[in-house]
Amino acid sequence: MNKRLFKIALKEKRLRLSYPRVLIYQELSQAKNLLSPQELYQSLIKKHRKIGLTSIYRVLELLESLGMAFKVTNGSSVKYRLCESKEHHHHILCKGCGNVVELNFCDISDWSKKVRDLTGYELTDHQFNFYGYCKACKPYRVQASTGNG
Amino acid sequence: MNKRLFKIALKEKRLRLSYPRVLIYQELSQAKNLLSPQELYQSLIKKHRKIGLTSIYRVLELLESLGMAFKVTNGSSVKYRLCESKEHHHHILCKGCGNVVELNFCDISDWSKKVRDLTGYELTDHQFNFYGYCKACKPYRVQASTGNG
DNA sequence: TTTTTATTGAAAAAAATTTCAATTTTTAAA
DNA sequence: TTTAAAAATTGAAATTTTTTTCAATAAAAA
Image 1 (cartoon, each protein chain N blue to C red):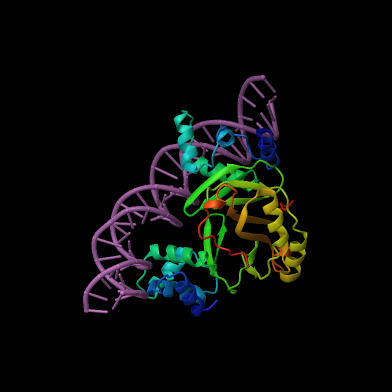
Image 2: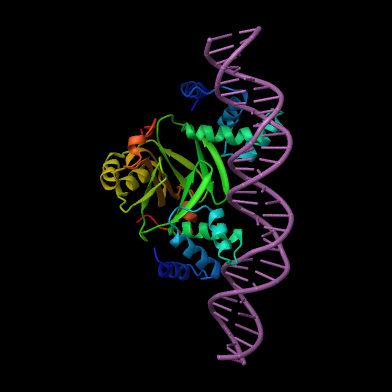
């Protein structure tokens, strides 16, 4: 997702396009792999950019809340990547290599109705995550859980 | 979910039914509200139980990985509750009061096929979370996001 | 029992969050 | 424009939360 859209998203929420926000956004968008807050911080420091670790955490959280970044928690490791699509979507993660693929479809209508009827809740949003093995990892797969009822 | 099932689950995974595990399980099962690791720890210390904070974190993680507890992250607050059902299920959280309801259904067949066809991944498990407002909070609802595509 | 193996918890380390004064950005006024 | 005022944002330091390490202990198996 490109910088222009970030700018627009910020404007919409009356948030400011500050230097740290741009820095962090750019660094993420250039990254080949998922980045941890620490990696992101070190990477910027190495480039002699003025940035505080606090801002790293804050901006990553902001990007996630805007639906522009995806947070991958793997055990105790936390990493982020920018989303390719600006539309609402879900993700699937490979349990072997950690690769993430975006799923740009979302048929939630049946679910919504069922959930509403069953609980009386008014749905505002949702989050689906899928886990599995990608084509490359499948052959090496050991002891995969089934765990989906 | 009762203690017997915890015992069985541990045995299946060749894990031991240790005193800290039982303690924490019981404390959670008696809790009226969701509990943070710190709350759980303080609560046990007040009752003069011998327990380390490290174990709290470890056992909560264990329970979650067994599908017996649910971790609710709300901003920077982390809380846990025991699941009522031992079957695979999903959750819906109220954005107003934080209440959690279990959703004991899961029609994932369409999704599975779609995801497999689209990505080539072999699915092992998934996690759905829904957010919204419960009946009680609906009238007070302010500025709800739509965010579900 | 004895042996093997898993688990614990204190302490240390690391990660994440909060606080708050200084700074930056935006808006409003001249 | 330029300047002044208002509001949001920053980051260093302090704090809190979470994780790791590892020797001691407890549980299960032999």
